[in-house]
Amino acid sequence: MNVWSVSKTLEEKTMRNLPSELIEDILRRLPVKSLKRFRSVAKAWCSLIDSDRFIKMHLRHSLTSLSNRHLITGGAGVCSVALDSLDKAHAVKPPFDCKSGDMISYSCNGIFLLMSDPPVLWNPFSREYRVLPDCPVEYAATAAECYCNKAGYEFGYDSRNDDYKVIRVLDFRHKITHAPMANETKIYSLKSNSWRRIEPLPYPLLFLRLNWRVHVNGVLHTLVPDPDNVYGASIMCFSFETERRYQMLLPRRIRIKGFDVSLDVTGGCLSVVCNNLDMVVVWVMKEYGVNDSWVKLVSVTPPVFEGNDYVKPLVYSKEGGRVLLLGKTLFWYDLRNQSVDYVFIEGLPFVFYAEACVESLVSLGGEIKNWGCEKEKRKDKTTKKRHPLPPPSEIPQAFPRSWRVHVNGVLHSMVRGSVSENEARIMCFSLETEKHHRTMMLPNGNKLRGVDVGLNLIDDCLSVVCLSRSGVGVWVMKEYGVDSSWIKLVSVTPPAFERKHYADPLVYSKEGDKVLLNCDNERLVWYDLRKKSVDYVRVDGLRSSFYAEACVESLVSLSGGKGGIKNLGHEKERKKEENKEEEVKF
Image (cartoon, rainbow, N blue to C red):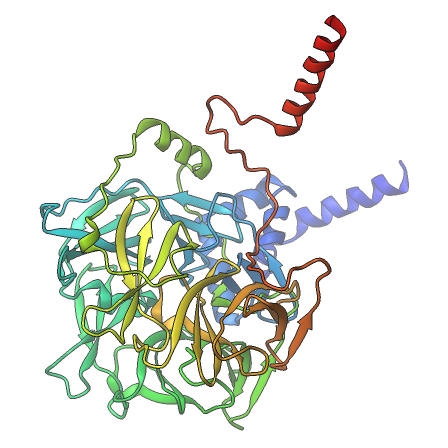
């Protein structure tokens, strides 16, 4: 018997003699990637790791010990960052087809909801996913009087029934006035893999736009208007266990007037974020459901953030003395010293949104479908109905230069407001449904006086360019469809551009710290996002006047499946051969 065989035999005997309690205690501390690998060590290990008891034990240990925590970022692709190190972002490729503009929800026990069409529940650590089944619309309004403005999806955990549930709210608007008419609310159960209709919510989806993403203690939370409340707003709660709603009061000392108020989650606690041009304040409910337990956690002022920037609390440090905040960038806020420490992560795009999460082995149950195949089957089984466009009189007048902006399968255009010529909004036309399905707000409200505004696209993010006498400002929507996620990316003043001309953002640098701008259609400049400096670019052979668009090479065919697109090079060669043959014959 050789040395290797003796060593292997000793290892196997040692493994067999280890108490099962010790093996469990060791395994529950490991990350999911290692556990997936160790399933092949022995049948007993595989059975243990796959068992519901161990899955819950592993999750409980990770939550209580604050281990195996990550940031999942979206925007320009999905990335994962380990919270213990915060040193490098690793690209995560979902095992299904998704668009860069598809929103990723908050995490619940390591599971995310990808708000695509159709929606997908996804565990990025175990790489399991489940495509949600079709959910037909049952609202009995006639097509002549209303249209479906938007669908809102969120999900959470029902601990009583050990079930993950998804809620879908469809918002219906009047075709002429665009006023909210009704909403249809349905709920999906992972256990039954089916949808059912529940009592509709008493508020239009307008108020659920950003704050509906807050899940704490098996309950969804959102801010809603409350005229009877001295603050003018309260928190609506929807329990996944009882599938009923109730209300909760805001902190008593909170200031709402002059602030943009939103809800979030910080360290598993419900939090309220209030921000305006002068400060950002974060309140946290230390004891869930107890109104007297609200405490002011964070209060920061510029230049830590720029006015009107949305600041999101993400997670506490392991020691509990700091909070990780996301504004235009990531930074730690020291709760004792009230100081700030900026975080720079290699490989992270400059514009992104982030959600804190914990690794888990939570299974999505049943058959895990291949999304690509499902989409192809749907295409084969159904024929797409074409929707006639509304008459020109019903379409608001679009601004010049703006109808060419395509993001997330939707065309966007600046249109004038119905109240004043100095107001504007963004009209959206879906290429999937072929309908004008919603409008969006501009980053600085809807005011246009003294400002020339245009839409653009930068790295799959919708952007707005504002030109005034004082300079050019470029705003970017970090989370598609979320009006509160607009951030100011670029601010350029003369002589980098001429006051009467325009500036287009084209593309980020590979490192993500600079933006290429086309100024006046006469020059290209790199704008450094950190130093806020400009570096002129000289390109050989470029004309003195030009326009430019950023693009990527592709092999995308335009054949459409019939007839084929002729290859011009092959056609020329064939004609040459034919001409030679004719010459020889002659």
